[in-house]
Length: 403
Image (tube, rainbow, N blue to C red; front, top):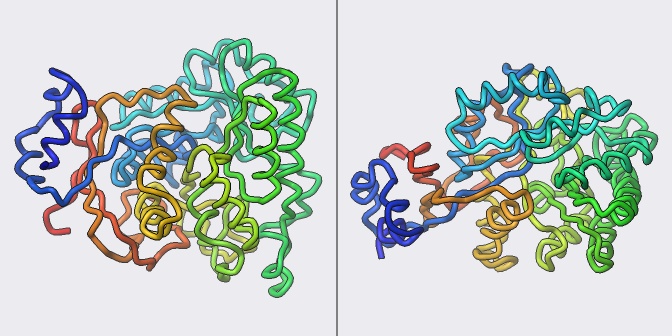
């Protein structure tokens, strides 16, 4: 069966043949070698616009996503202005309408300005956003989080939490473990993450709010969420490719290895892999967080937190997890597509991407379409190259014939 035959089987009737340039697609991919996947969905990205377009724009972020096989993304609200009202959300929506080539579903902030002092205009915003998050900041007040959950519950929206207890950070910037001790770095303890998750799980149980935990990185977080699910709490969570594939033993004195939460201990990575395999971890999200070259060139201590990931996620996960038998290919696709779309109510339609799983190459940031280049996986050899991505019948990425 050729890829075009597979495309024809995606849906029914006119929907299938609404794909533009279908004849060109059929001619270019007339082979059984290629694999067709539904459009991936990333519920945690940073596209930096409005406010920080020197790092990334909606346009460049969407191109990077399409290059990685993604047709739906959810950009976080740590922007300028912070989308905490209809007025402050409007600039972002206008840019999305103008520049997005894939589905972009923005978050609104939980609190005004993400300052943790008062709730955003959640009622007015609910119909325009995918969920509420103060990503980049943990909501420090339990009472405020309770109120946010109560409001979100009444609106049928998720609370999506960056869990971080500021009182436990102590100026840290990498994991508080063996590498930090050996190299004289300030560490971020695991408790700063899991302690707030523990608090929020109790609040989610109390309020009945749908609760989603961002980028979990510790073994305690996995255990707490696993137990909460068994108790019937409406909770889901994500982790990132880097937390599954790297730990503090892989650190280098390079800002490209700095993200928040940080790379943890080997035991944490093993717990995360177990959580992915047993269903405790519901989805994989990249936390794609581009910065300028200057902002990432100041070592572990001085560089900004964040790495890019949309263009490397599937090749890395396919190579290191699916090909090595940690997960089946079907399980991996569920983590990247089915589960995030179901939880966040993001439709698939006939979006898809075409991959050459036999293509082997080294990750080279110079090939990225993102404006960001910082990845700890530069030079890593992987299998799997995206050849084509289609969103709502439009080709939004196509590899050149020279690749």
